Length: 434
RNA sequence: GUGGGCGUAGCUCAGCUGGUAGAGCUCCGGAUUGUGACUCCGGCGGUCGUGGGUUCAAGUCCCAUCGUCCACCCCA
Figure 1 (cartoon, protein in one colour):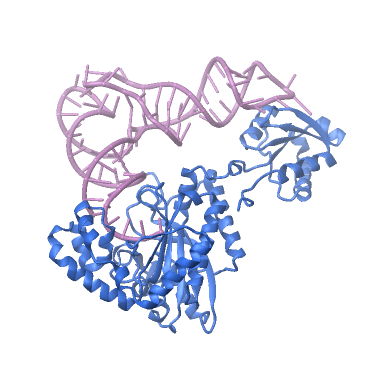
Figure 2 (cartoon, rainbow, N blue to C red):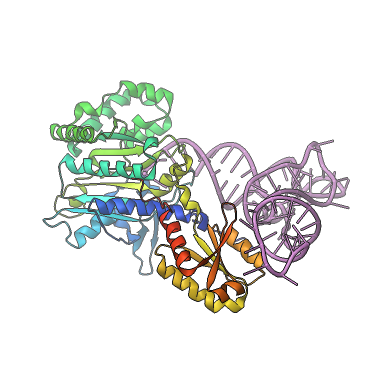
């Protein structure tokens, strides 16, 4: 009998690390709310055609990475490989873009059929942000400054770099593309095989090659910056000025191309050198043409997506995870004899009500006092609250410090609640480090 | 899809030129009839990923296959 296991590339998040996820999601949600962004909740399944029309037929994502299948009626549906397409679809479908602007976010799993490796999974979690109806560089800057704030809140700001580029208008890009292909064609045989293929599919990507000879050639190639249309150029310069004013450092990287067809003008990536081959932690850009392409009125749009596994890997790699995440239980309440169970239950309820935020775990499962204390220790709690015959008779609770020393005091109800409130108040939960 | 590393107890791993499967941690019990974390004693726990081959004998060698990790491609 084959051992049962998860589908390849679809990892479980076990209890020991799920707290990190809650921490990350809370940090992000707090900031999004503070900037006036509203959540939109989207289905995980969409009609296959949506992605083919938006992401691009010839992209790897659509060509070979989609989880597509026929549902019971025979329609082809696809587990979303990214969030933007579904978001635009929902906004159009419900009239959210009619004469109005939107600042939206969503979170959840995305699916791509790729070989898993570090920082890459077949099911992975993203937080995505999309803005509609703003055409100037102000909103581009807003998104970037907001992400910069998140990196600070998470303690990873020093480990990420902002890289910027402009892809210009679709027309300018098409002109440049032809120029680049014409320039490169004489060198075709000198290029590596991957780049020869790119020459047909996405020549701009050749700038990304890691092959030395290809890089030598590309160092001489014509640059897109010289083909940028005036309006895109002004937009890009406006964005850079705003980022400088906001003291957000960046580097202009002409090699940033983005794999999805719908991008235009501003594209950006937050990258790190701490994660091996998957250095991009957050990426996005402008996609002014997409709404119209999907059948809506022409609507300017910008957005980004953040890979949460990568952000967490990064936080872990540089030791940015707050130590408080280690403690999941504040106090462990145990009775020494199960005759005291009804009283113990009542006390647990009373303490949880009296001390907001208190994480109190009550002993279950019987056993000798020794075994109960052992469980108290294993729970990770700071304090053990012990309820024995003597305490019940006296109306007190024995409070034993489990982490430091081990001294034990006997407290009445008022002193106990005071102690627990102080414990909760002193607990840094990672929300105050922005 | 391509290349390489690795699959032995729940976890981390050792196991020599082939010779009857080990440690640490975890967990449970005892030393300790109301006190954890330290110490000591005992216990639970493995068809050595799977299938085939070579051999008197395979965890060890060979082949295949699956899984996993890393890298390429591509991407969050």
